Length: 344
Figure 1 (cartoon, rainbow, N blue to C red):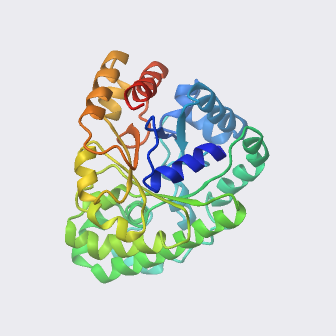
Figure 2 (cartoon, one colour; figure 1 turned 135 degrees about the horizontal axis):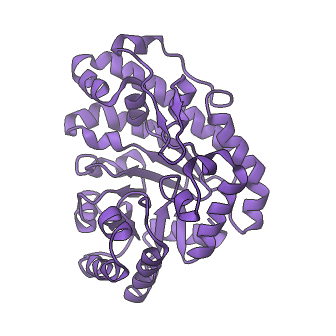
């Protein structure tokens, strides 16, 4: 993000009126490389392609914010790889970390990774270091430390079904696992901030928080979210595009001030459930409208979304979740233009 974009983001988070309402998108490997004209594997393997793709997006949509911006990532493999999970990379499929632990008991043998040396983490840092001069030359800065969340990482190490079942059958073991993962994530986020002093934001992505009920979220989700977001940062950004009604009322208490959620809930509902305390990023249907709709359908649905709003404060208009695979330039342009024309 540029300095101006960052300062406007902070103003939105403080609840100050910003018109037109800003537009912003989470962009990463599910959308960016194919949109730019090449494979996901090429994007992940080539630093020059990675940088060029982000530059291309910035140039194509200069009036939108891209969050976290110049995201150095290896899909779902980044954090699990530090624990030793096998990372699967196909030519044009999303990266995927294979299940590491054969059973719940094996979780006790895990050791906390070193974020400076283990798995793909050094490659995340080195890519940013190599390209930081060019990023800053383009007018942007590295603003966010990024990590998958505690439940998300645990589900990759143990398996989603096995992890969710173990919350009920072996809660003590799951607390030990989540404590270990959270200790690691806190260190990983701190290491990113140490490497790049321009970072003043934290982005944590954890869809598994939406897979549990209220009591399980309060016991197994909330304490670890609080620890991950305890660092002193101006922007504390959480992504969960699974159902989010359960977690929404607790997010402000966890320190979160920016939330990207899915299409299961409306902006008005999320405003109510978060008490209007959190800036919301959403909430056009990503696949059915932004990716697969016509430009006119995008315009119609965007106008409806805006007209239905009860409160336009603490709002960044986007799609529900990250930029969807296959979203075409003309639909994104139509969304941005419609928001600007409708919210002046």
